[in-house]
Image (cartoon, rainbow, N blue to C red; front, side, top):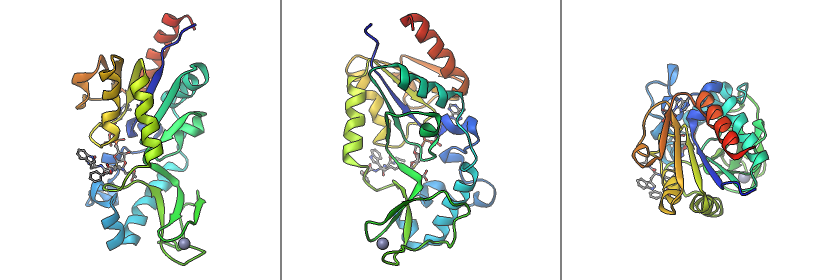
Length: 238
Ligand code: BJW
Ligand code: ZN
């Protein structure tokens, strides 16, 4: 059976149904006076590492007990079913691997990995709350930082080019729960369009990609994606 090649791009909205605040809504409550776009920068970390760490520690405390939702589960099922499938995520919350997704490219890193700003030290760390803040490297005493990609920092080239290739070769691109305003992630689905593939978007609202999409399914992706997957399986005789 010749199944279509599928590439998926996910953003924070796919985890909203799991209780993880989206990036643009991350600064609420005590953090409402801050702009997350300004905190997620190397400049903010350089000028106030404790403040930036407090922001990440607070988000880790929210994320630590969150569980995958139906959209994560469907993506893990696609991974297990389709021979040619790539999941590209901008999310740092770790919910895709927790749901069982295997072929995943992490564009913006992982909030549960901490690395040294000076040496090669790196560790998996799920301690919440994290103490002390800011944490220091046990090997060289320099500042540790979350292993995420901030604005103005380069994405890992190997990961980005594998993602680009997956979207360029895909027959179908699924874009789920992203505002599609952060580059270079936002341009990936356009490679599928350029090569004649279909683009389906799943979001609670329209985005800059909507006009280029074959169809936009408006609504929570934890509802709309399982419906799409059911129809797809029926069409393909799966
Ligand atoms: C639901 C839902 C439900 C809700 N179901 N949906 C080209 C043009 C212009 C600018 C640039 C460019 N190239 C590079 C730039 C600069 C910059 C950039 O893009 N800036 C723009 C803001 C203009 N990019 C970079 O700096 C990147 N680096 C780079 O390109 O290096 C080379 C370079 C450097 C400098 C200049 C030029 C080139 C790095 C980007 C790194 C982004 N990192 C972050 C932080 C990670 C750590 C953390 O989380 O703290 O990644 S920023 C943030 O945005 C985070 C996210 O992964 C990313 C995307 O956000 P996402 O996932 O889309 O979330 P939201 O909140 O925006 O949207 C949620 C969506 O869900 C909404 O649409 C809702 O409607 C929807 N939703 N509930 C379905 N239930
Ligand atoms: Zn170190």
